[in-house]
Image 1 (cartoon, helix red, strand yellow):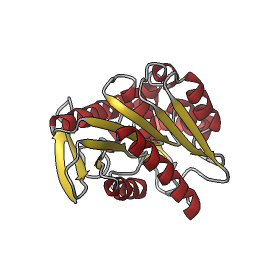
Image 2 (cartoon, helix red, strand yellow):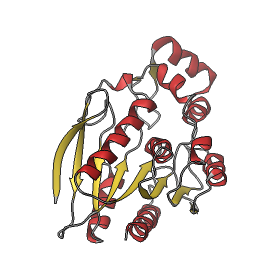
Image 3 (tube, one colour):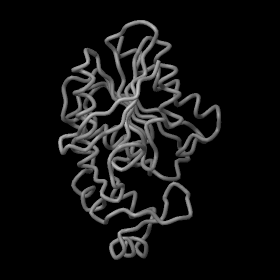
Length: 254
């Protein structure tokens, strides 16, 4: 069962969300943070909702600022805003009576989940799908010096997810990310943490996940899927990734 709803972040922006609940009542829930240029009903989120609901666990997915049905505009997105929205989502589900909270983040949502989990002590677990730990570094590596200069001059970037049209995004997004690198905050995470990434990820450098795993002091597990890319485009890779995350969340939310 799905319920569309919305809530306000600390700055008063309306955030669109969807609550997926199993057939029977539950006090267990996983909050799902989507990736860059994605949305609350991403293929990963929909699959995890189906799998987790079947295990008696609810899900709560929301659109980050300027994406999907949430207030915008997208070009004013910052990681600071996204973290505030993730915290507001967790606070909301707790107010709704959910007692055991899990947090899951994909790619950019993984960075948001890392930074959010570092601030909280009420999470039963954390699951990260190919998380960006240092988005500023990834952007420099992906775009190169010429495109970085063009971004600073025009407040636009190429569509790093594969589209042909340039995307409006203020250079302040990059500057904000210089202050939100996840390695040091990760040392404060207490929730057991799973990292899943393909060893052929073309977007997020593998060294970021390895350094993240080394920085974590909580119970942790890292799974590198041989041959898998950033989107887990091969069916068996996608199934393995969603199964690993489902099993992790189910085990720690029980």
